[in-house]
Length: 114
Length: 109
Image 1: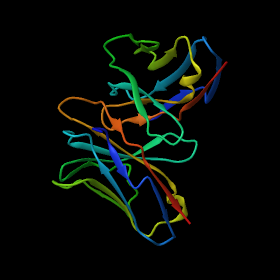
Image 2: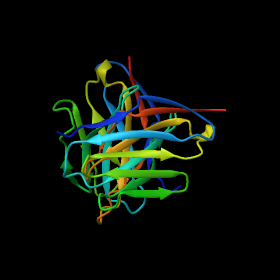
Image 3: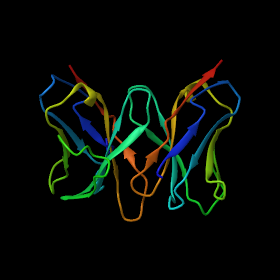
């Protein structure tokens, strides 16, 4: 399967714990985007990364959220000290760059904060 | 303003009918307009996309109509089928994409 992979698919955390979401882009893609989707709502952009660089984090909450896309390995979205309002579906998308704007989405991670 | 407004919120169409979903954007710098289809519990799947240098693009039963002067674009699904029942999102960009709030389409027999 050459598509975007995300894990875990479901994640349950208690308030105050850390959530770590992983995204492996389409093979050959070097651009990764993270979006958050609340129930019955559209997708909200969070952050755009290229390998080892954060390009645009204008949609990222200022505190508790961080993202990385290392030279080797998946992209990670990290949420520290989770609160109930963080409960949502988090989607990763990737694109090849090189002038292409097409973004391909993964299946998402559904985070539930108890 | 980065908003993309999508309507209707929900739509019921009979099998064989035409489904029409509309979107309007505000940022004239946007130059890429994709539509995504999302089934429950799944990630959005790219359906069809258009750039502003053309007014219409057709792929199978799916057509995008684009009106640059009005800053509007729409998705038409011809011969709608029950398998088309899903939530459809329009988006506008470059990078990053700004998404509409979604239209839940139900195609009845």
